[in-house]
Amino acid sequence: ISKFINAKDEEEIVFVRGTTEAVNLVAHAWGLHNLRKGDEVLVSLMEHHSNIVPWEIISKMNGFIIKYGRVNADGTLDYDDFDNKISGKTKLVSLSHVSNVSGVINDVRRIAKVAHEHNALMFVDGAQSVPHMPVDVRDLDADFLAFSGHKMLGPTGIGALYGKKQILEAMEPFQGGGEMIKDVAFSTKTKRCSMTWNDPPWKFEAGTPNICGSVALMQAIKYLDTIGMSEILEYEKTLTEYAVKTMQSCCTKLLLYGTSDPSLKCGIIPFGLSGLSSHDIALFLDNYGIMIRSGFHCAQPLHQIFKLRSSARASFYIYNTREEIDRFIEVLREIEQF
Image 1 (tube, one colour):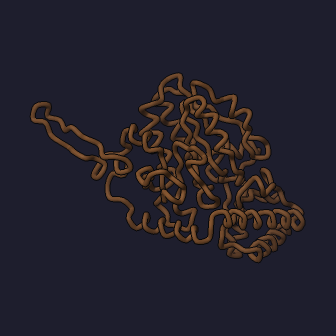
Image 2: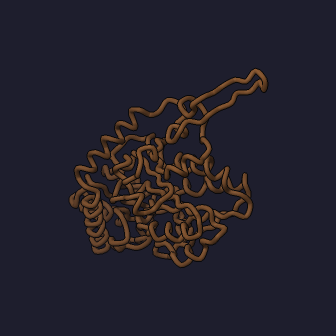
Image 3: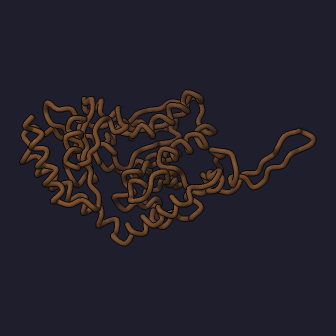
């Protein structure tokens, strides 16, 4: 896993249940002990709820300020607004590498540079990028990066948090239990137990680990490596471009949300059909064995920007084909008749 994302040291990889747990780990183990009243955390309005809610929870406990970077009408990040909101008060910037709603790829390297110029840390939500494109944590200069196994041919309930070693070493534990301690000693004088924490990553891996999940994730990564992440990205972009052009030419009621430029995004297409709810579209497609997602996709603030109550989302991976896209669009044309 460390080689896959070009981490400097294996001990910079912490096994977690997924990206959600990784964000919560950093929010509690780092944020709870380092963020104070007057400090600021900057996130964007395109974030998954998992990269919003943990910071809001900790903010209520510590009194720091959360600022939200604007998103343009086409779903791309407003970089000028982001740059202007990073200041000496900013202690951490937390940003998705790829939007799970629009597929837009954010220039996290640029944001990390500005953050570090103001002595702020950079957390990258890599849930939608690590499975779909080459990710190099050292090139991005991310202080933290998290991803989930189930989005990259692995099982559910396993993921990884990358953290720079010196930062992990300075952090407090997230959970207590076995394996995360070196020593627990009872004092007859104080009638208390003194504890010495284990070194990272074990300090953050309390209890029995998901051994099966971690082995399966490793095998998934090995398989992706045999294909090549650059090849996967290009293949997805090809499918996305083909799907968008074909949908635009064949579907008369089509509504596309966010940018349709394949050079700016991964294989995700948020869409709708005029007069139909996203849930009805998904249900109809399901009857034909075609799976999409409908709803807010755990990103309600971005849907507010799009002025939508929900959206349908088609997405592609290495196992999808043009023939499947043709069938998908054929069914969409049938749906338009209702």
